[in-house]
Image (tube, rainbow, N blue to C red):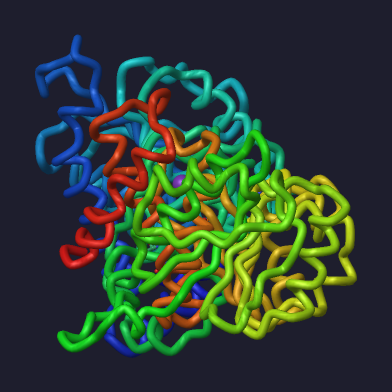
Length: 513
Ligand SMILES: NC(=O)C1=CN([C@@H]2O[C@H](COP(=O)(O)OP(=O)(O)OC[C@H]3O[C@@H](n4cnc5c(N)ncnc54)[C@H](O)[C@@H]3O)[C@@H](O)[C@H]2O)[C@H](O)CC1
Ligand SMILES: [K+]
């Protein structure tokens, strides 16, 4: 699913109005109608248990004077028509109300319910603590941080304990970069009813306090426009991940699915090799060999009889390169440490490898100490840093938005894929596009999860997936397996082994997406 900028969404809006064709006011009615349907279904769960009777429900609709405010006014009319209690406030954020705002206000007027006009501080009402506040002050038309009376109202809304439902965007939030924005001037939304496509800022950690649950409402923007428009950012949905999955031929054999090499583990961290190797075996590789210090070999053998083992010359860590000619995919890094001979062996691996590499953990830390090696990585290699590893690679502490911009830059410059792990992991391609993941949960913030991801990507690469599909499908399935594993665990108790146990179900679940 594409993620478009506010500017592109405006173009989509205009294209739809012209080519569907539909009047802009009717598009607003359609959008607000979908908000009503959502609220109608969700309201019983949104009001506190103490207010169980519909007659006691209050919907407090706070509107700006642009089209976002217009949506709020149409929604207010629909709520009133269906017999719900409403309070409607208009914040005079601009002295030039939009045409459709004015038309919607006229229609509401016919219902003879008075509107609270907010022009100055003294006009701002006390918002209740047990209502639903509909936030329709600013949408995609915000052109500078909220200020003046609009901002004052936003701050007062944020003081209320009522559930806040934002139309299209939390008012005050920009669609992409909020580095120069002030969080205090943004509605702390519990639910966002966003139109057609999600906005990038919904997925960024700096906006966590303002972005609640996101609900995407299909308002029928023109499919031709949505299909043809180029997008830098994409949200990876289940059906898109499912399309990447390859069907296995009846007459295929283990040779069809390639031979993966995992280089992982060192004294005290053999478990990293176990997790990466297991995940690799469970992700479709025909054969998996793990290159490991002799002292870790028994642990691996006992954990997985299906695995082949390649002994390193050093007993305790990765120090020498095996013959690479047998392998279709190579994953390196989990738990390998940073010994001098490990550094030398990794350098040799980067020079000698003829297949894309998957680099994780200590392999990335070594790379961060030797940034010139980046240009020598086999094209299509995949780096899987967590935010700490990424900041070492990128050279400074960055906001999430800045990290993604930097991630794109490094991918494009070096012809590699970077999978920046975290909530809403992002995968950047050599051509500058970025996929944002839609699976996973906070229980996955624990040791070993990254080792598992390395194994999955390497397994898919061995099984002849192209780097783009291997990285994207692995990212999705890894999160999905974490979500499935959570059903029998809690966010506190979830561990990487649970995730591996659910890989089968996760791959299978794709057939239902
Ligand atoms: N996407 C669609 O197809 C549809 C979108 N709809 C809704 O329309 C808004 C966008 O409306 P727009 O009129 O362009 O802008 P806003 O209502 O978001 O606000 C603009 C309004 O506010 C003024 N303004 C902007 N920034 C500030 C500021 N910092 N301080 C004060 N005032 C500010 C600006 O001058 C305007 O007056 C979209 O989000 C949807 O909700 C349609 O209704 C359905 C189709
Ligand atoms: K809004």
